[in-house]
Image (cartoon, rainbow, N blue to C red; front, side):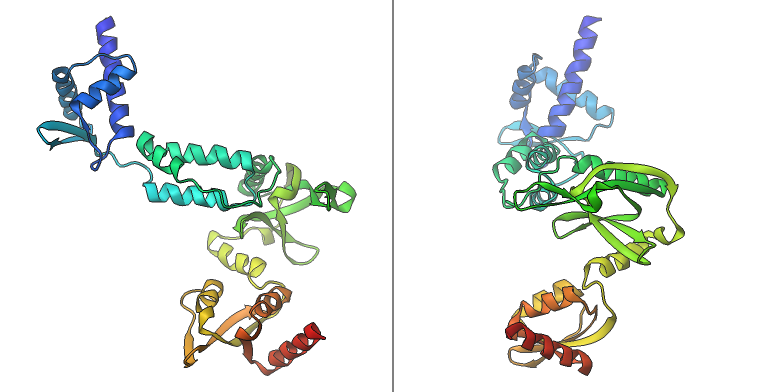
Length: 327
């Protein structure tokens, strides 16, 4: 009975080693597999190992082999959840996200790296670059997201204390620390921060709250209104209204800009935006946007490299604002 149990454990360990440490580009020779089994306290010779692998193959485990020199090497063909490139992208996204605190970032990065198996984890860990020095410090972010997601799924209201920070980094609560009671619509990740998008009956529109600035988030019993319930297909459009040039009337605007800003225009209005070159270094694009302080701030950062050609009333407003800026 003891020998049967030892054999079962050996097979399980062998499956795990093949899954974690091998792929078609990185097979392990028979002697290497025996050495790895020995590391976990299981003795196995090369002849027995070959029989074990044959038994696993008969039970349809995706194990293949190829010759390396004069030795046979084995590897698992079972597809892992993510490739090295995919895991690296996830790690970079975690590193870049301001709302993920430093401690949570480190924890998540290494847990994601482990998903790639021992060999891939070593590669990922050796290439981790910490490039975001603006990490927030609210360790309740995960709990906040979990509670808010519960409210969204149940279509109920949520409540929380909301704060800013003063020059010393201390929390300063809005509304004299009275609880906000909101109607959640969606959780949105935008420009390194997590936001809760809500419907506001007071303003008959959308309001947004930074999740990392919430404290003591709770699910309320009261249901949200019908206005707060949106289809997944509508979330993109609502997000544009909430974050892209928000807060003003929608207008068709013709922009003229230096061709060095083609990428900037595409980033903001989509790669399918119609751009026409009108001079060797000048382009024109017709876009639809909401005219708001956000739009003006975005436009003026480019100085003389970008201007408005139409409509006429917006050109006039643009010139007035430019005069006010220098005056």
